[in-house]
Image (cartoon, rainbow, N blue to C red; front, side, top):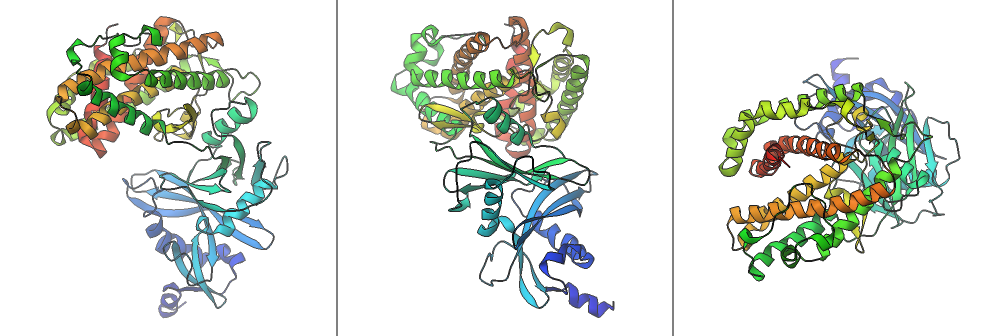
Length: 544
């Protein structure tokens, strides 16, 4: 091919003498598509998780057809390679449209095939594609053995496609509302294994009948060339709701902090409670109930109940090895320490390299954190599995207020994908259930401080007084939640260890979570680094 001829081919609109159904087999197209087009397109997408790294090149790991009758779309499994010597995998479905007026903002590239002009677009922007996936799930046969496998749950009740629309702004995935009663979540970042969200949602909904998570309706998985089972779509019930528990809690906390003035409460007269105490609502001092109100504690009890019910469901399986409870052992201890020591060193480096970005309490806490790094490191090393009698189970793994929906004074638990920084294998490691509880406790802490940061000027109190009041309230939130959680756990005979063991694990996991949070805050909003730093120091200084 002469240079002139090659330049003509590579200038938009790209021209190829093949039909759409054969396009992916065309080597020249793949070369142009991956290097000239996708490298620019992918980095601009909100679901792209490599923005902090330098993209080196993109490979087409493999492709498959998503089709029904004469309709054909391509599913692409892309391997994005980075200069830092690691890679990520992404799922991108593509479609061809010839209508000039269509998808003007969603076009990936202009193209001409066999004289027909048009555009390649992300197929999720095409209603016909969304309808096809829905109908393939609706008509799925049991024990599908094809490359692209569809599964339908007994909970699936629809008999026809009616409508679809995007759910809203999201980060790592794209969710489509179908028929105003279901959601299909298309996973963008993919792994060579079943997605934990698919596994956990299907298990809780189908096997255990757990009612407080959106019912599993169906899914689509791909068997790649190595035989790996890759989840590309998960379909669940759409739960009508009043928002997530984070929004609910921060609204409640805003009222509670306003009550300091409204009810003329002296922060220094408020009774305190030790960390990890257990209190029923009747045991909460009247001064605290008068300040915060009864309703927020009733809701905390309900959230604790739903959390415990989730863990009871996850810890009562004895036939499926993926969910069978297991004890602590040496392999788990080695895995845990290696993982946490690596993460801790990473956070130390971030804090040391960004001290100049901090000021006030954040700076003082950060200096204290660095001075006591050996003490904190020893806490992570001080894990002797032979002392623990409780069991490990599959857990949520990234449990916080933002993963919970509020509906009619009740809660529905969502998004079982696991911790974003973890590998797919790490997300499936059985963990102490109290790790989820620790994650929720850290979320309470965040909600309290976020309310102060976002509304502090509205309260006629100093930041120091607000922080003190927040720390007191935080411990009562923990005490009420923990008591309700433990009662239901013990009633159902889920073995999560004896009292001293439980306290150790809670402290350990809350320290882990706060160290994890520190990296995000230092990179994204240094002013908020005070929250995880305060959490770290409160655990280190806790003697009870």
